Length: 207
Image (cartoon, rainbow, N blue to C red; front, side, top):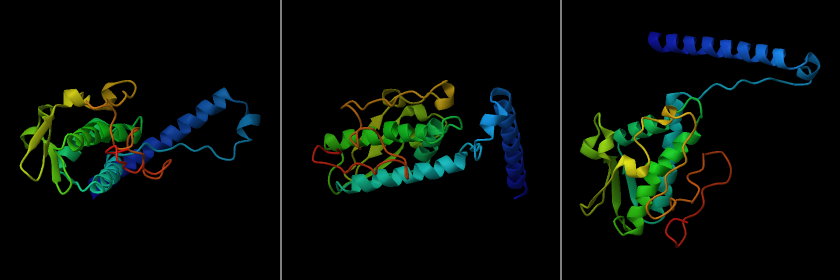
């Protein structure tokens, strides 16, 4: 608890400093007459790793629900969730990198498995990392169905494995699956609470 309190205090001090820096920059760039017309100046805090993790859980729940509409139950283990955070956490860009990461690493391979019959109505598909996780997730993502079938996708073919979005100066576009864009709604999984709700799955498999 003491460590958590210390971290929270440090984060709050950093936020207060950022607020002061932003106001100072605004005062240097704009005339007081303009600033006085603003009702409020809000500096948003960056999303923390635990907060992005909770957003990822909401996105995973959405994937499970839509796959369940096709009779497929989806289970992901903690190793896979850790990989999502490694690839999709970005204080700079917020939650959208996680949206792209879920699409690349789960929706795309799962869509392909449903299209080619690997994941059928009544199947439970388990998702983990090659070798059960560990320090080398580049081994790939492994999907196992109820009938004992195993499919493995390398992070390279899914467009991942670079160590997270912070390795780049700007977010990279999501890699399409080998059958085209993810069939879970085309444009990827929408963020909970933002924009329209997820597109319903259609007869073309996932819409």
